[in-house]
Amino acid sequence: MAAEDLVERRSIDVVPDGERHGTAFSQFTLWLGANLQITAVVTGALAVVFGGDVVWSLAGLLLGNLLGGAVMALHSAQGPKLGLPQMIQSRAQFGVRGAVVPLLLVVLMYVGFFASGSVLAGQATAELTHPNDTTGIIVFALVTGVVAAVGYRVIHALGRVASVVCALAFIYLGIRLLDRVDLSALLGDAHFGLPMFLLAVSLSASWQLAFGPYVADYSRYLPRATSGRATFWWTLSGSAVGSQWSMTFGVLVAASAGDAFLSNQVGYVVGLGGAGLIASFLYFVIAFGKLTINVLNTYGGFMSMVTGVSGFRGQKTLSQRGRAVYIAVIMVAGTAVALLGKDSFLTSFKDFPLFLLTFFTPWSAINLVDYYLISRERYDIPALSDPGGRYGAWRWDALTVYGAGVLAQLPFLATNFYTGPLVDPLGGADISWIVGLVIPAALYWLLARRDTSHIPGVTRYTMAPPRWQRSRGVGRSRGRSLRGCRPSRCGTSVRLRMNCGRGAAPGNRTA
Picture (cartoon, rainbow, N blue to C red):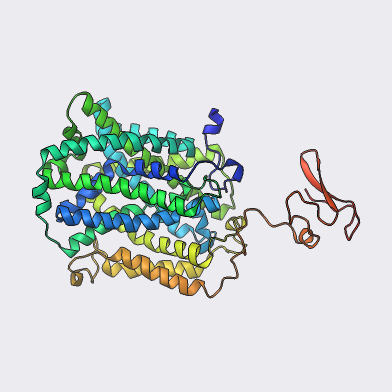
């Protein structure tokens, strides 16, 4: 493959059929590799760090991964059908410019996850190359930016390699861990507590739901004929297996190591494997695993920024230079946050995904209800770039439901900086994300079904021909003579010449 073919040219524009490639299985390797990494380990460990036991923490994490992963995979199935980045399609619900409201929070999420990943990967990079953590974070960020700039093909190749390398490393680390701990004692100390169980569910569900705003970005190059069901199941299985595997390891490490793990997550995990070359290899695996997910966050962040800005500028494509600038902005912002928060990582990270979940569950509910129940997979893709078109600039019904969905969660939200009034009556349990899915889904379905005039009969991938052409039948079929009109090629343009004179003026032609 030539170098120019390796570097991605597409950004927010629709992927033509001629550039589609791959199979649904590619979603399994990508999301397995993206989830077999140190931040997922820390996420699982939090379920124990904040008071849960091993058995019910594992059960809660599994339930959250399945529920959140199913929602995330439903978004993934949209990619082959539409050939668009996920947040561009959100313009159909929120309006061409109204989509900027959830987009602002999506970009914030990417920057936050870039930062959290850079802290842990920076520690591993520093151990490999022997500078301090600050230098390790900066080096890792630069590598992330370069890979994200190359784009889609390299990202999937990275996922395939990571799925194998990281799986082998986790198998080895799991064997070493089980050799050190008394597993029967850990499993025997089971005591169910609803708040801690729901915390575990929320941690893993938020982990999965956070992929929702960009998961279709990595399935949009699949051929349009790719089964939506196959895309769903391969995405769900890769993401759920990878995350549950990592989180299970995190639960067992946190339950057996205690403060030794909390004080240095990367160092302790590597120490399980041994010293010398083995330790160096494990540091590399940690950095490599984080590279995979941080590239996804950087790529998704630049896509979301372009989507937000282009809604106001009327931009439909992006140059390579513009692409590099947007990626650099995400990289610099994420690196700055990582450097500022690297000394208090664990405390900050626990609240970060749960807080963001408040804003993403209403968006996810609205998007999925619209795609599967209201529009039924039918969209006018050119109109997604036209504020004066069928979707308008601002769709206030969806924006109102989105705001109501966020507000409805606040009484049930439990974080260090805010606790809702209904948390204590529920024993301290946080069920805000459930409220954030159910209420917006119901409200949007009730409102949106009243007026479906903006929904096309079939999905439109190109602009409709002008009305004068449609009245004469021009443009209704590809390469087929219409009422004696014969397609012929002249130079670099195709012209339809009216030769039969049956209601057509001799000079009428279209490029």
